[in-house]
Length: 104
Image (tube, rainbow, N blue to C red; front, side, top):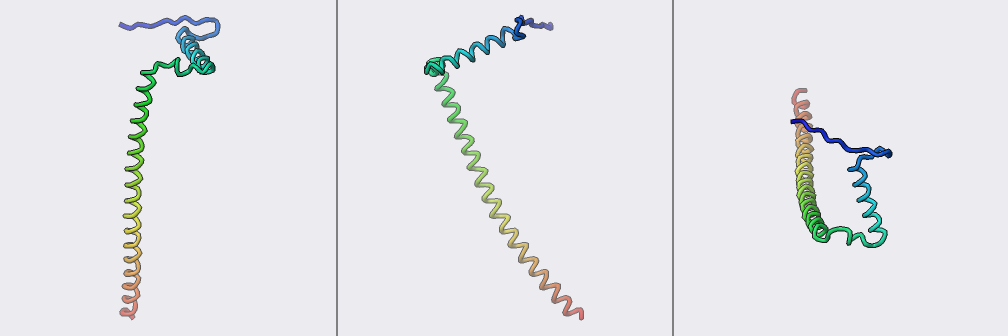
């Protein structure tokens, strides 16, 4: 069954739902201006949200630490490979020069 919902639009072009959101926003702004902002928020929800954000922040910090450690390890590995490549190039040059001497 397909249902469509009709929302009444006033002359300002906003639906009732949009007006409710705007009204709630202005109510919170007014409470903030009156230094009652924290009273306007429910304390339990506020503390729960803070706890979730702390957990989220700690998880992100662990991810950053892990990625930084992995990056450091890869950089060390790349430096070792670069040193090995330089050594092989030097060996190759020596071999080339020896081959040239013996071929003459």
